[in-house]
Amino acid sequence: MANQPIGIFDSGIGGLTVFRSIAEQLPGYDYIYLGDNSRAPYGDRSFNTIHQYTWECVQWLFKQGCPLIILACNTASAKALRTIQQKDMRGLDPAKRVLGVIRPTAEVIGDYSKTGEIGVLGTNGTVQSQSYLLEIQKFFPDLKVYQQACPLWVPLVESGEYEKPGSDYLVKGYLDELMAKSANIDTILLACTHYPLLMDKMKAHLPSTINVIAQGDIVAKSLADYLHRHFELEQKLSKTGTRKFYTTDDTADFDRHASRFFSAPVTSELVSVSSLTC
Ligand code: DGL
Image 1 (cartoon, protein in one colour):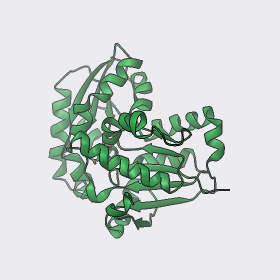
Image 2 (image 1 turned 60 degrees about the vertical axis):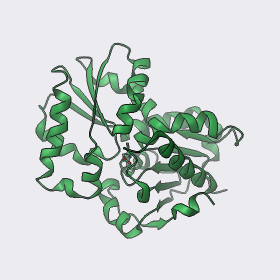
Image 3 (image 1 turned 120 degrees about the vertical axis):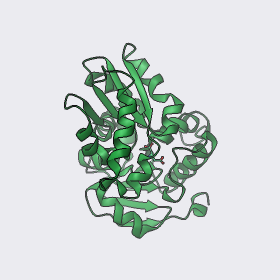
Image 4 (image 1 turned 120 degrees about the horizontal axis):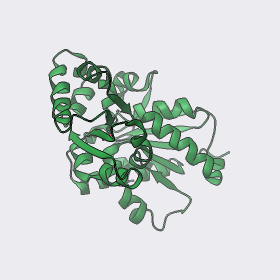
């Protein structure tokens, strides 16, 4: 059987929090993870740059044989997915699929709230795109959604500095800004792959009545459902339980940090940025 893994893409290492949930819920499939670490973070980059970088990585994953690619990155899902689906993939094999993380999350997030008011935390790119507001509106038109960009959280997590006590100040700062927007917020969505690493610190600063929701399990459940509904695509996928990891930056660095995100040892291989488009 041909090697046809599921591709998982993120701007860096954070997408491993989503991959971990996917691998737990759907262990039998083969997977290739690509982190574009050398060009991360994407969060403050322009639309054109995020689209160009994401499309280069998607094309590379197609070349590795992936018929299905998940953009685990919220910023890439917000800024690049629509153009990739509607323009870039025109003329390619129509059986190939690229999916994001925003729609599956938007489909269910309203079910977590009793007050009908939620907060969404993300990068500048994700917040400014308004993608969550637009998608959630389709499924929960009465839900009030308050957004807060947390641009310092990705560098805090990538560097490992988040484990130090000094990081509490930065965690509390953005949470206070969000909670000042409404006293009725009872659910906070972590709309960035890195933020689950800050879960304990966030909970320490929030009343226990507030739900903090990481999206990995939501995305994994939605993927399982998608594969159930798309039998022809599901049949094509190879199923030997292989996991391969690639990074566009230092592999030793990737492997050292990866276990915090993936909860298992990771051995990655290098893909140079220049080879992504060859
Ligand atoms: N992975 C990105 C996300 O989920 C955050 C990291 C970045 O800014 O590149 O939005």
